[in-house]
Image 1: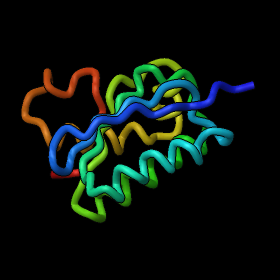
Image 2 (image 1 turned 90 degrees about the horizontal axis):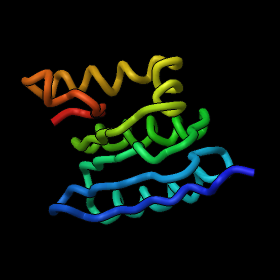
Image 3 (image 1 turned 90 degrees about the vertical axis):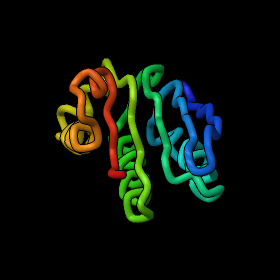
Image 4 (image 1 turned 180 degrees about the horizontal axis):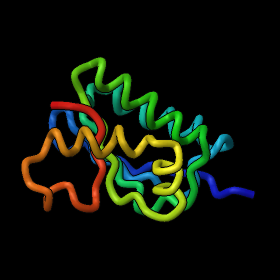
Length: 125
């Protein structure tokens, strides 16, 4: 039995929200996470800073959600940053090659290598 995911969110500025995803982002829990993240976007947030440091497990459905939100935010001139990826969630990003989307965008957005250490960003500003 998988642990249900929950999303903690706080709107930090007019169009920015800080989000922490905790638990397991799987087929069983992705609808709940999608609903909560969608509510932030519908409220006008165009920049989501998503901390996945407490995400224990992410399956392909969870990865699909992150990629879908990434594409949607980019289309609206926004971005989605992932921070704190490690363990199994980091491995799924690496194995699927999705890490390239995150790290390439972050390198483009930052000028200092120290700034991008330990975090992955998606999108463009």
